[in-house]
Length: 284
Image 1 (spheres, helix red, strand yellow):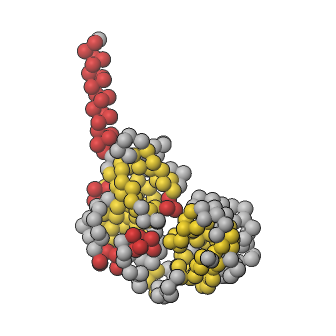
Image 2 (image 1 turned 90 degrees about the vertical axis):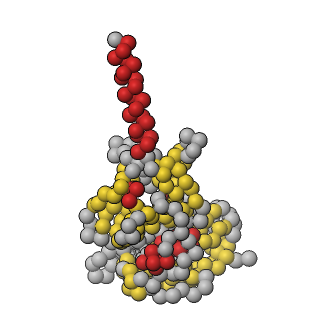
Image 3 (image 1 turned 60 degrees about the vertical axis):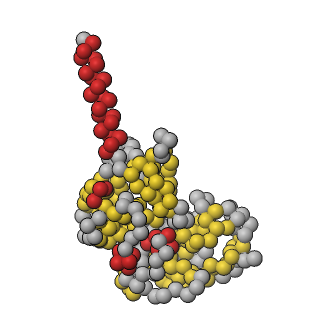
């Protein structure tokens, strides 16, 4: 009896060691440029890392830290500086996967399962699995990634056509991306002026287009800013509630301290295309 109990404890102990060993390490490069390294923890019924729109890392002191999905620009498994060819191949928007053997593809990040398996949906909509040890990097926010790696803007063709070079102070806000980091940190009470141009598509049917003020034919309570039509230009500071920008050029008072982010007023971004060009001017 005692011998059987000891054997059972030993097996449980070995299983725990195996589970810990299966968790790979990664570095989250955030949209503000910070780098956070740790173990890819996994929880829930699906045994995944991304839960309720938050990535999770195990720290060296045995704790866990969560990071909102909108604030993670790159999941870096390989470390080091990406090659010039890799950065040049990165699209202007959307997700981009690079394997350690040099192969790359556009698609959509789905999740990381069991601490060691990347779940990825390719451009054809097929879900694929890759061992994390075979993956170099997953780019979630190419614009912020270029800033982090000090790389020039992409001239690759995306869903909105050939990228147009931006003027100094202008920011490209892609309609299929949840939030775009402006690179501007504000304090509560700061006055910021915006000047937006361009057109986005919030679906693939004819007429599903919007300028910075949105398409007045459709509003929904589920949109980030329910009072604004679909497709309009919106903003938020940090994790506070989003607010409308539109074509308004008058300065807007910032509601909180934090990083200023821009986005498109829609709750389904996967079929969106196009982008707004936005000039941001922090008043003194």
